[in-house]
Amino acid sequence: MRLIDRYLLRQLLGPTLLAALALSSVALLSQSLSALDVIINQRQSAGVFLKITLLAMPQLINMVMPIALFVAALVALNRLQSEQELVVCYAGGMSRWRVIAPPMRLAAVIALAALVLNLFVQPAAFRELRDTLFDVRTDLAATLVREGEFTEPAPGLTVYAQSVDSRGGMGNLFIHVAESDGMATTYTADEGRLATRAGAPVLVMSRGSTQEFSENGVLNYLTFDEYIFDLSPLIASEELVHYKPSDRYLHELFFPDLTQDWEQRNRLEMLAEGHARLSSPLYNIAFMAMALAAILGGGYDRMGYGRRIAWAGAAAAITRILGFIVQAASESHAWLNLLQYAIPLAALGLALRNVFRQKVSRFIDMRNRPSRIARGGAA
Image 1 (tube, rainbow, N blue to C red):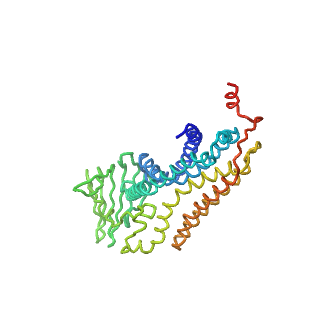
Image 2: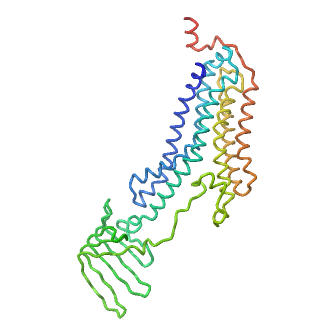
Image 3: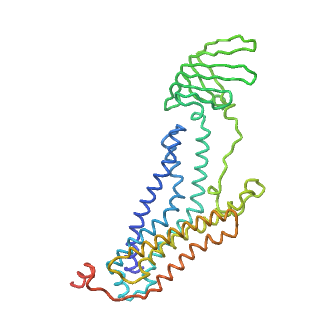
């Protein structure tokens, strides 16, 4: 790679990394706010909260990268054009394609990285995320009792604890069990803790009593130093983790198991997700071409390129919105999946046409000559 190519690439790489970092931080903040329910309502640790937040990042990064690339390209190219550094490149004999080659190569590399994220990283991360959320939802310690609240984790079962510490220890525990035949048993204990006995989850209660009404209405009252309350009936569930289309690998989306009822009913949705995984990286290249068209698609203007940049921004927003609309529509009509590729490719073609339509100007405006070039000439 020639020196001028490396220089142009460096001018674009810095703003791209900064824009990607800024937009990813905003996406991370929004994702963390939506995941606060895990700590507040499910009483999970900060480690689980951080894991859930980070596992959602591959998809968010893929969404913000075309925008970051577009913004960074506009900033870098606008500076290069305003200081007539691109004109210097033309004056040195570089063709328009040679000038736009470094930005397009950068966009192609980012598109390839986005494709890898879509095909391998995102489904692996989302599967782990789905498993983690399932464990949180079925966490017995979180669903059984809430500090200072009466909870009903199962029909006929009421649990109350005055205090719950960070290790799951419970103070002043109250449990009421109502049987279907009308019998009821009440347990009270000074302390309680979750444990496992013979592979089964149990609640070990210390220094308490039981009150039970028999069928003839007699109250049986017993005290105990330690009592083992079996929790196995509370977690006897056949619920399994269900992977959504966003959690599946590409071969699972294009070749679903049609013997499964859910996959039969959602075949078009899975097909649309698969084509979206393949087509969405093209927006990185299309947005870079649109940024190039905004700056290089017209003549040099000492008043700036605000109007052209605004039009390019509106065109980029419309293009991406159309992509989302077509993806949603493809879940009902399979033939619309072709448009998922046509939209970014059409935007890319129109942008490059606008770039190459403008004639190359090899004239350097001496009145607005950048200081670094002036110093070089004086030397």
